[in-house]
Image (cartoon, rainbow, N blue to C red; front, side):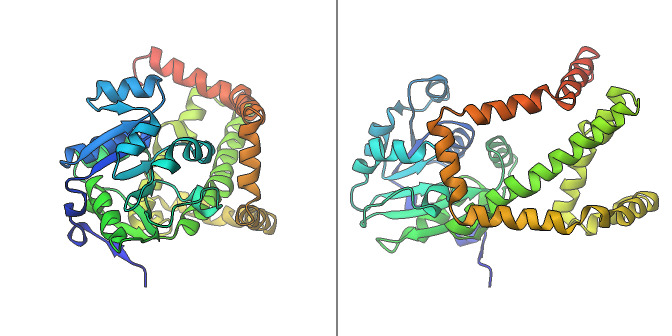
Length: 331
């Protein structure tokens, strides 16, 4: 049975008197650091000397090098990008992980693909919010909470689960709930979403926008109608509340008939095979190797792909519409 944790399942006591070191003051790192501090905990930041470090100090945190923060922290929370984590860990973090410390991840990636080796006498845990850092902060301040996936990979002192749930409580997640999901499942499901679902959505929107523009429909009306108005976001929000099938009752009969009657054209065996091939590639570790190689090469392919989408007819139309709406004072 699925293990679900709520506010009553945790206490902050395991974190009292401990120093929590946030390594990486980016979107997740900054949001979680602020939330934990507001929960009454002792939080420091480790970051290279860049704009993020300056922001951490501006937000009132003591900010150290990653190595020193890791050394000072009783609970060390890695909030760095997946592809750079192994190198930073080996250079600056591993030596600081002395007996009884806890190492926490916000993503299961590096553990799932065996990119990091741990001392045997520490706890290794995960608390992974299923939303963006800005929303982690916004929902904490609003008292709403947000979903997180949590797991314990290595329980040295028998307290790892208590610490994991305490962190989930401290960042505000348990005001909604947390779900026990393994490092492996968190990682592979996340990558499957990013590589099979999101590209399909982007491709569908891009193709439909470009088709409508080629047919002569007004650029602003087209882009707003298809997604920039926020209506599709509202649909997905309703799906999160009622289910994707359940939310269909909120639409007109015309809308529902159009969707249901055309759905089989998109539910093809070819796409199903594409999704399966992507999952197999992810599970094999081949994607992790590909992404590490991309980092080593200086992100050349990655930057070229971003530029290609940005410079496409779709990308240009999107920027033009946003600019026009801003100039009109309605965005």
